[in-house]
Image (cartoon, rainbow, N blue to C red; front, side):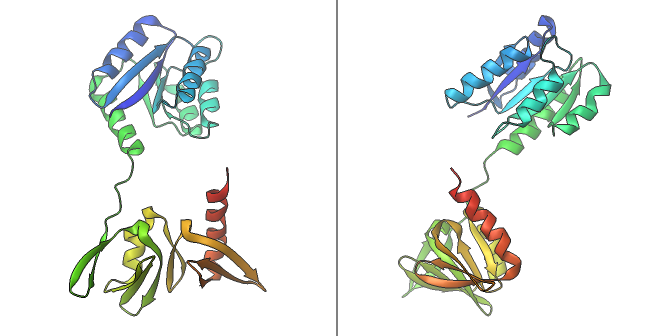
Length: 241
């Protein structure tokens, strides 16, 4: 499914041209166009209320009322801001684009090939990461595939790693560091040189005399000092409404 984008420009011919070019890109499924900043905020609000947010906003800078610079700063405050692309005839506003971490800065008249590059960049940024691959394990002569979501924690055993799941433990000949890279996107994080844990399976975080441990699937595992703050921040983000 393609992206939904919003184009904002107070000049009708420029807006029509931009909407036409955006609709010509097969990576974009829907384009809405509005003529001022206030209308853009209303469109963004309606999209969020309908749970169909815009992935990107293509925004002119010089507009009456709520101009593109102010609107860009407002968008940057959103909990999940859309990607912002400035489209303007004036090069001097580029510094403002960087201040709000805009995805790109296009100069009018917009060339189709330059716009296509911008859309490619946004598409790459908004695409969901690929699902982590399962791991093949041998059990009594039978090969079984363990999904990362099944794993509660992993402990290093030399050149091997032991996967602890609800159905049992599995020893695999893969270093812990390799599994850390492979399954980081699945929420398995390093807490110690000997352990990775699934953040979603942590039921307790214990602090005692400067020593930190976590409880995962009934097992109490040590957290090294260098990983304590990072883990605590992860747990706070997980539990925040």
